[in-house]
Amino acid sequence: EPEVTQTPSHQVTQMGQEVILRCVPISNHLYFYWYRQILGQKVEFLVSFYNNEISEKSEIFDDQFSVERPDGSNFTLKIRSTKLEDSAMYFCASSIIRTGTANNSPLHFGNGTRLTVT
Amino acid sequence: EDKVVQSPLSLVVHEGDTVTLNCSYEVTNFRSLLWYKQEKKAPTFLFMLTSSGIEKKSGRLSSILDKKELFSILNITATQTGDSAVYLCAVENQGGKLIFGQGTELSVKP
Image (cartoon, rainbow over all chains, first blue to last red; front, side):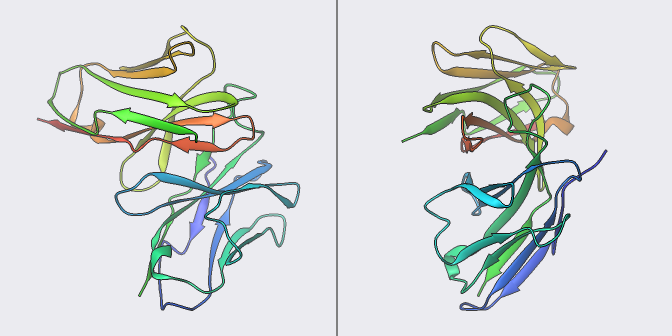
């Protein structure tokens, strides 16, 4: 079964450094998302992306964050200057169409990148 | 503010028991409600519910949605140790964004 793949699985970085988290969504999917989960907390929406532009973003997704789909397969999340509170598991997800418009189109999640900011 | 609340937060049962996990929500522009199972890493999809009163079943798992009372339940019958996981409820709004509950941590003892 096709799956969403994320790299790296774990990234350690120093405060103030830039990080890029990479995702390869399922190939025929059109909607792409980033979510994050701080240890012990809820999964939180960051941003959705469709047709090469951001569809919606949360208040967490400030100017330090950006997303890009540089080619036909990759979807990246960049954090320009990491802070300690950015430490979390970051999940990429994709769906073929907007979830809910068809009962068989749920969001598929990758295994996540655990980001540790020291 | 949109919110999804799950209960209980954690549950310990023995193999063979039946469990019911609860999810209530207040979300504007509701589109669907989804249940996911999270073991070590990625949430894996279980059910998507859009209509009230229609039970979805997959093996020992089943789920139903009540859009009038704004809740859903996930039932697991004849639990096994492999059912141990965090079960996440998420509500999708019309924009496609998922709002997650805090999860129910289920532990099934042999």
